[in-house]
Length: 558
View 1 (tube, helix red, strand yellow):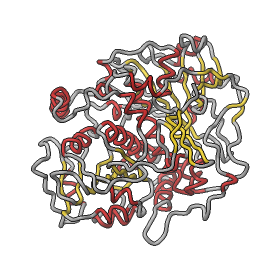
View 2 (spheres, helix red, strand yellow; view 1 turned 90 degrees about the vertical axis):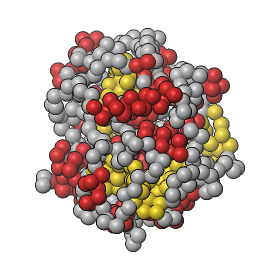
View 3 (cartoon, one colour; view 1 turned 180 degrees about the vertical axis):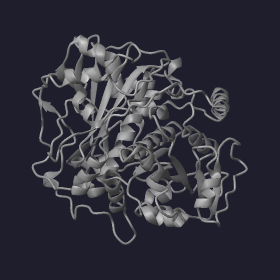
């Protein structure tokens, strides 16, 4: 085992919560050093983007939420100021301001652990009508819904950079500032920041789908190369940005097989003059050496996998055909008239849930079906996997017995799980379950109190209609690909979380991600030993209770 893999496995064990002790974190929250949730580059030219009012969003009936899963049918939008504005407005912008007493805070389209938002976003593009006269790198500023012009570069460089990608492609880069999360959550912040990256990737993918675009992860890019393109210097500053990934955004219906940009373009970026200096987020900091070790161990080197168009497998065609038939009939989906942008903008985290509300079977199975990777553009963004399966505490779903279930997101895995889990599990498929879904009852019992106990005693896990625990393949992906795969496992869980948020919202429910949970106690409950599978994220879905005493204000004035 190499040193990087040893380091990340050591971090994973050290960052686990247990019944006897939580993972290391701050003893108290020192509010005087609370990080600013908004990064800006002082001195960089600011390019304002278009905004939409709540009334504007409600009036847009098309595209529908259902159409987001087939963006090629929408037809690609032109690359201009309005479409770039909408991409960011529907993915990473402020959704509303909340106010109670003298305190006010912003919520965003993309959720974040503790609303701390460690993720920063950049766009790298050629000329954009009414926005960019020259190819440029810009930093997105959600507070003003604007772009900060970090650098311009020659068209020749852009032609080299975009060579091999479909016409109309541009790039979105994402980074993390771990200090923003470590201030509150300590060593576990590295996990949460990578959950947030998954949510951001999915938010961008849904927003792009509404414009007839797709997103693809440039999985062969190295961390250093991504940092050069974004103008992130790194260093040892506690507030430094850690480059995470680069996404290609391109017209749906086109094929994007490139896993990285042309290496010859990178040399041009090393010569660029960058505008602006990042603002200081905190006057003082607390060092979390474990996070730096984890970040160092997972920095990725460039790779050169050969990517080919994958032939459609027989079981994928079957599943896709069934999914299409269900969607077309409107019997099980019911989402054909639900506007996509309305769903995106009304998404919130349910802080409390109604423990007397039930979910109907059609909605429940419809949500499970959406998490399957076949023909789902949100999962096509990732180049590997799926790795995560859903362990479900079903509390209140009509027609289903209360208890512990598992939903397998890859076919043919049931026998392996049966040999890995406790031998006394039932493995019964409910009579109402569609034949193509691998969904099994493991334990028939009222377990809502236990669901809450495993989620750090958070009541929402008990009051939800169901709570999902994302049980991911763990040791094998890390050994096969390397320690850099560790964040990717959390990205997949974050993507699943964002999908569950929107699915719940579209169907009249609400969700909430849960990053605080007891890792090994759940593994012990299942009879798991070793690191073959690990619990990486929890998510509750139910009927929300109304907030009391909190005002909701528009995201942007005017």
